[in-house]
Length: 367
Image (cartoon, rainbow, N blue to C red; front, side, top):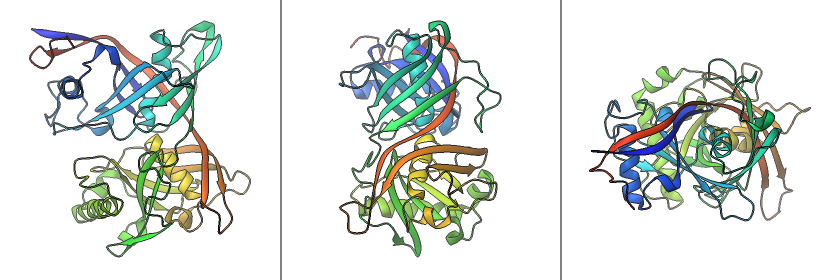
């Protein structure tokens, strides 16, 4: 026997995965995680026995519920389901999957649609961030068709405008978890910065790289990959995060000067592979860090004086634009900078709506 669970399969930004109502999943975390592993086909390396796509970008889950928060309409819990491992990580968030939360919430009747544009107020349970998602709803119906294009996705779709607040210190509680703008580890200067997503960031040139390499070129350099993971672990240890060998947090990023008219070039690690494009949360982190004088990101950035609150990040699939509202404080202030909000435009598409099945031995559907 198998247990049927209501599910909507969606592309969110440059990611893809199932969206669930929290009430349709087990209330017990261990059982819920076992269900998600079964749904996606993990720990199978090919995820052949589930709906996962055999990559970190296509092994993601969004869990939605009504919110009891004073400001938010809905709560969004993100789960990264590991490929090849029986691991479900809910410490990070995912801004790409976030782009599907607003349309999903409207479709499921959690938020009433306006005629034109509907604003859905979202609390990210993983990090506590608050997000306004502006969804196209002509005639009170979610529209997925449109002319917006994002790099890393074929074709065009309706835009989803995401504006995020409360992103400073999303996981560690501090914009600069070590208290330093720059730290040194293994002979490399790094900036450990936490806005929307904690990231350990280094200049590509310090590893003998250009920062413009393809995913395959970087991943083929096993010595670099091993060194990068060691540096990531060391920085996590310094701030008391413990053993992060099975966790996707913190992420790692390489930065370099731009060469395609952007603000900077970057490669984002998931962390065991290079992202084919760029994570939304990572882009917000990198963009905000680019404005902090002295950071390794600021050192390579080329901000346009006419649009200082815009950061265009060049990545393997193109470019992602981030708008920011930040304040750089005078020397001697209690904090070096304040991050008020940051935003990015994404697209999404509903691919399938129905039920997904898990063996009754995993979950009987009760509790």
